[in-house]
Each structure stands twice: as C-alpha cells, then as structure tokens.
Amino acid sequence: MTSPTGPGEGRQTRWRSSPVAVSLREYLRTEASSASVLLTAIAAALLWANLDPASYASLWRTELSIRVGDLGVGEELRTWVNSGLMAFFFLVVGLEARRELDLGDLRERRRFVLPLVAGSVGMLVPVLVYLAATHGTPQAHGWGVAMSTDTALALGFLALLGQDVSVRVRVFLLTVFVVDDVVALLVIALVYSESVDWTLVAMAGVAFAVFLLILRAGLQHPLPYLLTAVVIWLLLLESGVDPVVSGLAIGLAGSAYAPDRGSLEQATGLFRDFREQPTAELARTASVGLISSLSPNARLLRFYLPWTSYLVVPLFGLANAGVVVDADLLRRAVTSPVTLGIVAAYVLGKPVAVLGASAAVTALSRGRVRPPVGWLAVAGSGTIAGTAFTVSLLIAALAFRGQDLAEAKLGVMVAGLLSVAVTAVVFRSADLLSPGLRRRALLGRTEALLDLVVPVDLDRDHFRGAREATVTLVEYGDFECPYCGEAEPAARATLADDSDLVYVWRHLPLTDVHPHAQLAAEAAEAAGRQGRFWEMHDLLLDHQDHLLPKDLLRYAAQLGLDGDRFHRDLAGHEHERRVAADVESADLSGVSGTPTFFINGRRHYGAYDQASLEAAVQRAREAALV
Picture 1 (spheres, rainbow, N blue to C red):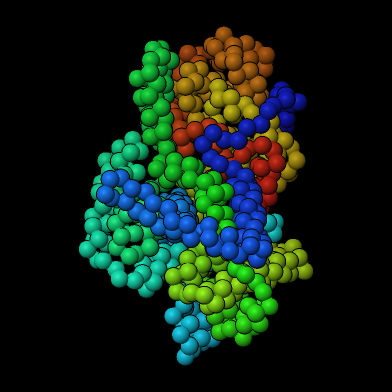
Picture 2 (picture 1 turned 45 degrees about the vertical axis):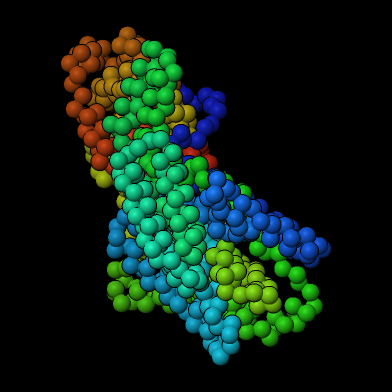
C-alpha cells in the first residue's frame, strides 16, 4: 500500500461545488440567513405598526383586483399575500416532504411511524393545553392557532444557534412536522373556512386530478401545469376554502429521484447533436433534455426555495406581524387566556408531546422504531417546535378579530422567543457531558439507512488508509472527469490528516462524455495487477488531458511496470469486467455522475472540498462511536 500522497501534491485548484447535489452546509446557511430576513421583516412590521398604525393598516387593506372582461378576482393586499403568495411557501413544504419520502430515511416506510405519531401528538397536546386555558370562553374557537410549528423558521433558528447536530435534527424536524403542516391546512380548510361550496371543492379536486395526469404524462412545458394550478387555486378561493392547500397538494405530487445514467446519456446525445449542428431547434431540444433528466421535485425546489425564503415568507411577516404593542395590550396579555394559552401550548405542550410520543413509540416497539437522534436532541427538537408563525398567524387571522387577534399575535411571537431560548439551553447542556455521553445524547443509537447497495470489500476494493478504520469514504470516479480531478487533492488531504479513515476508489467511466475514461480505468487495473494501482491512479488524475493509449504506455514505463504485460492487458481488455462490476454497483446505488462519495454507506450530498469532506467524516465518526 502506498502513501495517500502522490504526484498531484501541491496542485492549485479552484473549488466548485457539485453540479448536481447542493451542499447541505450551504443550505443550512440559507436557512439561517432566511430566518434573519424574516426576523428583520417582523421587526419592521412591529416598528411600522407602532410608529404609524394608520398607514400600516391602510396599505394591507388596499383592494387589488385582476380582471379579464367580466371575470375577475378582487381581494385585500393582505389576502393576496396570505392566500396567494403563501401557496408557494406550502408548495416548497410539500416538495421537501416528498423528497424525504422518496430519497430520505422515510423511504423505508416503517420509519414514518414515529414521525406520524410524534407529529400528531405534537399537535393534539398543545391544542388541549390551549383549550384548558380558554375553557368556557368564546376564544376557545381559536384552538387551531396553537397547533402548528413553523418548520422553516424553527430550522432557521436552529442554524442560527450553530448546533453541531443541526443536520440530523433538521431531518428529524422535517419528518415529524410534515404531519403538522398537512393537518394544519386541513384544519384551515374544514374548520376555519366559512360557507364552503363543496361543488367548487369537487371541481378543484377534478382539476388536481388533471394536474396529476399531466405530470404523469411527463409534459415538459410549464404552461399546462401553471394554468391547471391557477384553476385549482381560483376554485378553492371561490369555494371558501383557503387556497394555500393547493400549494401543499401540488408539492406532494412532485416526485423526487436521482437522475439515472440512461437519461443523462440521452441528454448528452442531444447536446452532442447541438454541438454538431447548432440550430435554435436543437438548442431547445437539448435544453429540454437536460432539464427533464432532473426530477420535478428537484426542478421546482431549486426554483421556488429562494423566492419563498427571501420574498414570500418575509412579506407574510411584514403583512401580519404588525401589532400595536402598548401598555393596554401588555396589561391584557398578562391575564388573556388567548395569549397565555398560546404561550403554554407551544413552550410546554410541544416539547412534552414530542418527547413523550417518541418515548412511547420506542417503548411500545421495544426499540425497533426509535428517533434518528439522541434523546437530548429529541428534547431540543420539541422545544424548537414551539416556534410558530406562518400557519398560526393564518389561523389567527381567520379565527379572531380586534383585541383577540392582537393578543394571539403577541402570544405567537412570545412563544417563539421563549422556545428559542429554551432550545439554546437544552443543546448547551450537552457541553456538560463527557464526550461519549454527549455523542449518545445528541446522535442516539438508530441504525443508519444505507445508500451504498454493494458494501465495501477490502479484499476486493482498492483502498488507502487503515483497514480497521472507523470511517470508510468511497468515491465513484472517472479519470477523465475534471470534477474528480478537483476532488482528488481534497480526498488525499483528508486521508493524510486522518489516521482513522479508509478511502476506497470505484470506477464509473462516463463514456458518453469522456471517451478515454474506460481505457484509463482498465489501465489502472492493469497497473494494479502489478501492484501499482494507486501510483497509476494518481498519474491519471494528474494528467487528465493526456489519456491516449500512448500516454498510458508512457505512464506504465514511468512506474517501472512490465510494459509487454501491461500492453497485452490493455489490448485484450483483460480488466473490462472488473470495471463493469464497479459500474454495475454504481447503478444499483443510484449513482449517475462523478465524483459521488459515500461515507459509512450514506451518500454525501454536498461539496467535496477538504473542509466539507472532513466535516462529513467527523459526523460519521461520531455516529459510529455512539
């Protein structure tokens, strides 16, 4: 075995993130920054409403109409935000939920049992707390305000807190409170919608069925989807049901899947046709082919997530958080059953419900179904679940008027602030534990769901590092792929700095775009037969623009290999089947591009610079040591 260093040491590389996968670390930064934008909008609304309440109220009550001939829709500006733009927010919620169902841990359906129970109980208990506080008063009708966690805001606050376990807690929160969002919107539709026209609701259902048929047919042009979605939204609006439900339904319909190699090769062929004959028609065909290789979920989420994070939700905050906080309101809130009920429901009811439901499911299943994080992290998830905003204020606007509405808004905001403070205390308490107990408290003992179908076999796979290492880093690579060339120094540096890591290379030559990659892979195997695999591996990645047969023979001579034997191996394609076995294992694990990394059997979705790989390896090690 050779040293993890090689001929490429010291090469200067400008790092780029993967063209397919979005860095989870960058995504968490987006959540933190979007939470900051929302907080700024809330602060602006409070300042505006308190400095000039008349102009604040006047603006959001402005009538805005859209008319075509005799047909038209006219609503207040606040309604356009709450029922129109917020449909896009719930579209993103639905897309994220569907992604977890199709690609996340919830693709193993038994793992949905705990989120289903915890999410349901996490709504029921706060409602009961609120009803106890408002028993015998007209304000009890507003029990829906106390149900829903604002998952996006909770995740944003969690990222702002800078928790090391935020990645795993994020997944837990998403899976638990997907139930929360669905049920909350059903409550809006069934409880807080007045004079529902069920005929129009049925027509909206038919329009949604048409939407599903268009989606199933695989039409690429966005116009049919847009028109059908608008029809669904209008029918629900006219029916009396809050039309934000349409966004969630459409989002849940958007299936998520990794692009398969067949569709990518087809897209490559279309691009090659355009390269040979660059016409407008072939450009359009190639563009459609590239886009269609991605799942509807990936396309929609990539487009709408920034808009909802930085425009829709902050506008909602600006339109709804403006409450005049004066001495009279504060005096009423201290004894108001609405304010006290909401605060108690979120700050006490949510954590008790999430922690209690998770413990009950674990006990009743005798540990077969358990949270994917440790119990301290479950408690922290329960406390941060007290962060409420979007759905709570939507329901508050439907259930209350006047002073009750102001008291409800104040209760929601106070509950959020207290929940964040308690969450910070919960997670900081982990620092008082020993390293082993801290890992167990935060990460738990749940067996990870593996993405790597063909497990590592160190008697067969090419590897560097310690055979008995705690963490295994697998890379599917292509010697002609420039991104693999960029990733190589990071992989070497990570291995060099970590004595408890084993690095495995598997071949995935993308022959449709890299015509020399297959023979290069066979050359590495031919060198491996003579005990020099890693030396050839390093040379190939360091000279990716020179992979012709004459170059391969020159590298063999440079390494002191038996030239005749090496030439016979290449000419006879003696190692073609060995490379094909790696390609087949990549297909089984859903790998379609290079480089693709797996860390302890879990696919690494993110950047592959040294810092990102080392952070992912460290998280995997902590999980393995629990």
